[in-house]
Length: 149
Image 1 (tube, rainbow, N blue to C red):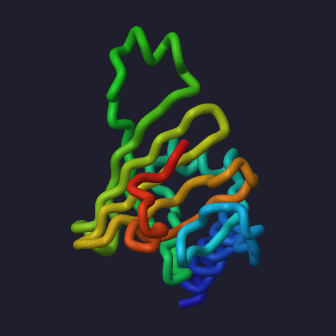
Image 2 (tube, rainbow, N blue to C red; image 1 turned 45 degrees about the vertical axis):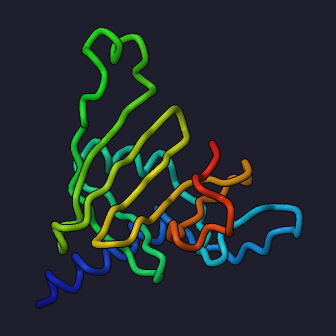
């Protein structure tokens, strides 16, 4: 039992170091989702998790979801050698295999989309604020069809 408790404590420590929840209040001139959670991301640790094949992703309800991921190999081997800083991963939630994820990495920027049942969840930086926002596609303001890069 103590071994299981230690493993849970280690996982919780990793989550708190990987994703640090913030209490961001935007200025009125920023177009933001109607509901979101904001986080600081330890990008180096996240990249390590990507390489190891399992990442923790924050969900809109504040929980963490562990995803099994692999390189989606969207580029040819020659292009991948030319642009090693660009990677694309595909994955799925280990507890709900119906939830699939796509994760794109370009240099120090990470973008995630999770497709789960009838919900689409975005995890990405908005407005170059250095924060990652977690929100449902349905929470985008009226008239905003996609999230701009």
